[in-house]
Image 1 (cartoon, one colour):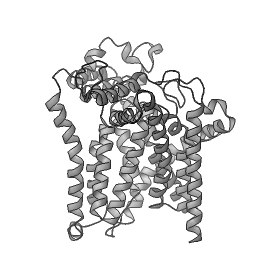
Image 2: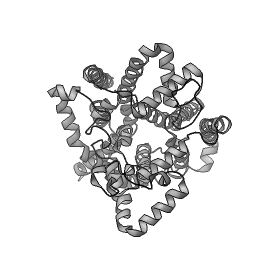
Image 3: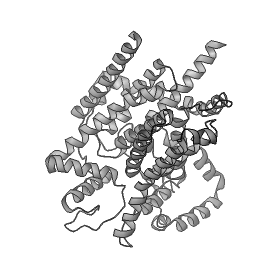
Image 4: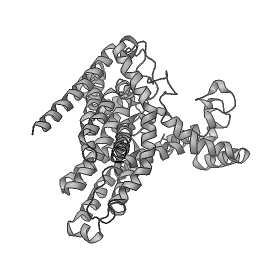
Length: 437
């Protein structure tokens, strides 16, 4: 009992530190133009929802509906407009993101205790609390903080449901994954992967699935989740005109943006923005067929360069520290000043996490191999839930997704909690094996 209260106290301390750092960050950081580019579109979507009842990125009195952006985040911005009006919506959004970003400390600790020792779970929670990327991203009106929190919450809810085998928990996991899909439609295949893993990875017989009705609950989970992408698809089919901007067109454009080796077309001065120089870009990103034909033609001219780009370089860029499209380092939109630029102690934590980042990546990569080795330990046991599989699946899945499309480091920021958990799990396994020998 004493150890339990010590753990609770320490966890609350880490959570409080995370919350205070994020509050201090938004109070000291100045973003000269916070509502630009993607942020501006999200705000317009939210404004149109609350003022016109139309989901559109057009800044007009009579906007035409579209599906260019996923609706989950604009729905929240619309709620912020409803509660705070044109003047008060911004602090509502930022404060909510600060709270969600801090709550990930509790979620990552809880999930960690399901498969690693509590003191290692504290390490993962501390990394989440001090991560400068997670702190910085919470100050922007961008989807990353919401996506990071709800993805982690969805995974946590699913593994708890898998352990407890309660219908209400599977229902909660389905709803969580459903909203996470509305934040980022790349989530579409994750629930199906998780259910497949429940059959293939866990050494549980189909007979046992039927005995405890787990099979029925997993089917219900998938059915409830499928209502979200199904409903969004039906809405788009019914309300959108043929020429309306869609998420599919944005996805194809992103594919083309990531198809330049080294992010360069010809002139290095356009690095990271190679699509601005490419005269074939409008056609390159116009349809999947055009993208495939142009990419295949360029691949045949220099196949080794493109193989190296897609197999090695793109995953490296995705998980690298520096935000490439933006101010750089941990910043997306430029800042005049920030907590890390004005406070020595805060900047020291940034330097520490930056120093640890390559080690986290190496441990996570080694952990992918150890994951399969550790899984074999339970090959003759039924109903063994290898919880450590799920954070790895998230990291592997998104590495594949963004390697195919555009590997901007900004896209990996929401995955930092899962990355830290994977690396700490591997670190624990290696330490325990060294001590044992």
